[in-house]
Image (cartoon, rainbow over all chains, first blue to last red; front, side):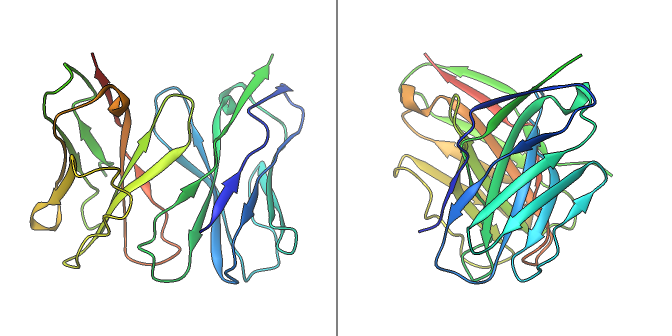
Length: 116
Length: 114
């Protein structure tokens, strides 16, 4: 079974600085998808960025980028120019590309605080 | 357009009572998921519906949990004889069919069992 591990329960960053959130996963599959979701206090999960495992190029969405290391099974999220609105819980998630219903397997989350 | 809608937003009930949680997915989304988020924990998959296919119930923690999806749209998650360990936020998500299609989440129902 696949597992996702986020080893940083809490992180803090100064406004306008850069922060990196770590995520590792375990799988025997070669084809899969990885996601980062943001959950503010409103509880709604918001997709931040996604990566297809067969693509070597790291995904980028504005200030958000990932460092995908397939061999190391690592998928970290970098937030540049941090803003107060980035403060939230961040979840890393794995999705198999095989017929397993498309469910997401989540890590435990990292709570990010942004200091003004 | 409208997002995923869940009701109620909060539910407090006594141990042993049955509860029903509702999810109204985004129009046109054929896939619907239920997840549970216990305090300080990540999300745990419960059940998945895709079109008219048999649902994937592999994540349901006990036979007290059940879910149905009527007409390929609205879904109801039912918990019978609630226990205190059922206290959690229950999140619903929907998506178009396709492996890279993102799941869009509702705001969840916070369930508290007294």
